[in-house]
Structures are given as C-alpha cells and as structure tokens.
View 1: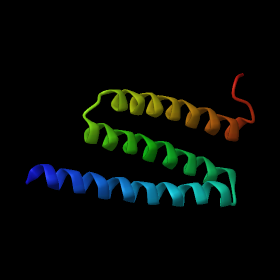
View 2: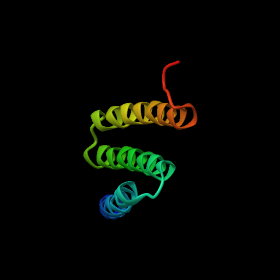
View 3: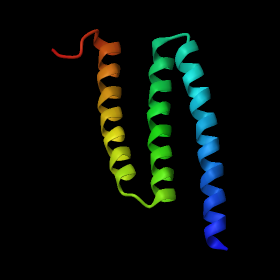
View 4: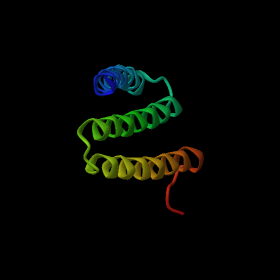
Length: 93
C-alpha cells in the first residue's frame, strides 16, 4: 500500500513541479525588469533541482541526487554573479 501511495504522490509532485516551471519560464520570457528575470531563473533552477530529486526517489538512483547538487551549486553562483552585475555593471573587478 505504501508503494502505491509513494508512486502517486511522486507523480503528482512531478506534474505540479512541471506546471510551476512552465509558469516560471513564462515569467522569465515576459518579465518586465531584469530583476524579475533573475528571480525567474532562480525559481527554474530550484524546480529543476526538485524534479531531479523526485526522479531520484522514484528510480532509486543516486546519480539524480548528485546532478541536483551540481545544479544547486551552479545556480547559486550564477545568481550571485547576475546580482553583482546588476548592482555594479561588472562581474569581475
């Protein structure tokens, strides 16, 4: 019984995460300001991370968890670089 509940809950979570990513990509394309687009990029990489985690739970493979960790680290660094670029106009001083 718990396997069935886990299967359906992961499937519903993945579908809802895909819907959220669609809305975030819409905000990324349509965002009126650069700050809105950077926030949308943050949301997209966090949702991609969560999708990989749910896929890793579903398949039982640790490769997806490692990929989610890499996406999280690269997304954080990219957010810092973009924020610094918006504040100062340059990334490397």
